[in-house]
Image (tube, rainbow, N blue to C red; front, side, top):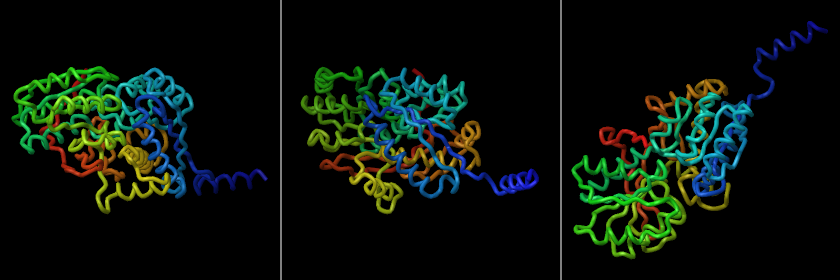
Length: 383
């Protein structure tokens, strides 16, 4: 009897595991609070990708994905607590909030537990630098987006620039990169203004800009909801007609519902659906799942993140945290919904396409999808 049991176990081991291994993903993101307009859509895309992969038998046909979700409520302290709880549950990889500041609040836990972590859509290039070897981003860097938008502005003949930023978060300092590139190309900075996150009245800033002579050709800001709509309305009410360039934080339904004040606004983002593109295919999946067309690219960004995790498991043949960390760091040309994604040769900030989109009659109009000029990309700025 013992010999029979031994031979049966040996045969089973040679044939592979009787039960599929599971990739356990800890999801500590902002389902409520100020970052929810970004993280909530990302989570929808994550669910689409996970369900799609699991329905096919799992990664490689045998490794199912299990999500353990925690709402960190857009709070840095709560993010740290949630990440520690997930580490205690022995997850293989973690997904962190869509902003460098709360994501960095988890870096101590991530480094100590040696579990790779990817922010949903934080774009500060300082995130993986400060966060250490186990911290990754999943979005075009602020410095890359700024290089693309500044080059486009210069090519349009915009020479005099004005920047509006907040020192309160890493993300809202993107305009500093923008003006660095514009001046490197030969442009001039006419001035700058700072604001506080959550500021409701931008009339003083708008009045100051309206009094400038000459007027700025272009104004760049990375303000996002609820600040950006108030800022844009104040500028137009003061008679400022300059080209306004924003960033991915305003890729939301709110921007496209602002009417005339948003007309002609240009912003950088992670992707734009063109005919026959992977993003167009994803948008159809989203509509079939949720019964409506996606209103932001952040849905697709969530799908991209899971495709990165899938590629890391396939590359490493493992769901162990250290193996996944090493695999992610060496991934090349992973096909996502928005673009291909490469980590090899980077510090953890992915190389991926940037799209410039214009608001035209309340809809998206693709301006360009350029390849960033490496010589123009500024070095990450540490606060």
